[in-house]
Length: 256
Image (cartoon, rainbow, N blue to C red; front, side, top):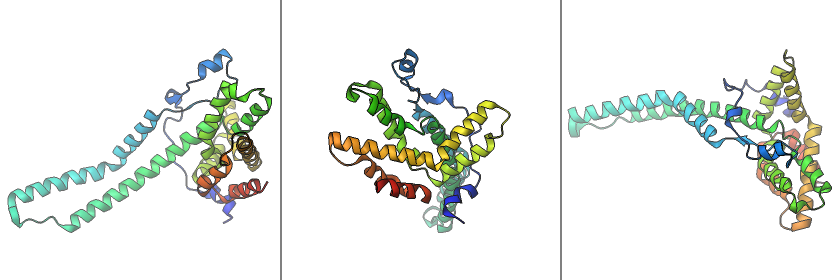
């Protein structure tokens, strides 16, 4: 199979039952946007307590067989000690069985958590897919970028989301495609518009523009403030997680 199309054949990724999680969003600068102090209403993330709740929920849901087996085996262990005394030795097979059950439960736990986290992450990115281009425009239009409060906030969120936006994993791209296919023919106009926003994130030309903007910002920062090149640092840190098509873009941009 073509490496560039592997995400098209990816397994179906599990989605949360409640796909609207507006109540679990942290948007500390929403008032600044409403007052007109900020022009972009894109500064928001998923509440960390909500994420912690997701982990706890699925650990309990998928690991209960292992936890139950642990309780039963511990009860048998105590009973055996009480009845047999010093003659009792814990069977190795029981410990091995417990390890196998825990491994199976943790595998399905992590897969479900990973699926849902991929959904939360890419949903956060829908409005931020061109944040590097927006920030680059702000640099060139601002007379004093250091005094621009929104520029500092945008740069913070830009760096926070570049790992996911510039270096999407196979699973994230697969989920983007699956959600696009699901909503592109929806009866609701809002769903179709949202699907097109996802399509714009999948488009390789859009990715190339974002990488070029990120590289230009990094070069500008290095020229202004010195130090390591921000883009090169990101590439070294996150290139491993992305797909061959994006790696080709990275190689092309890094050579400019």
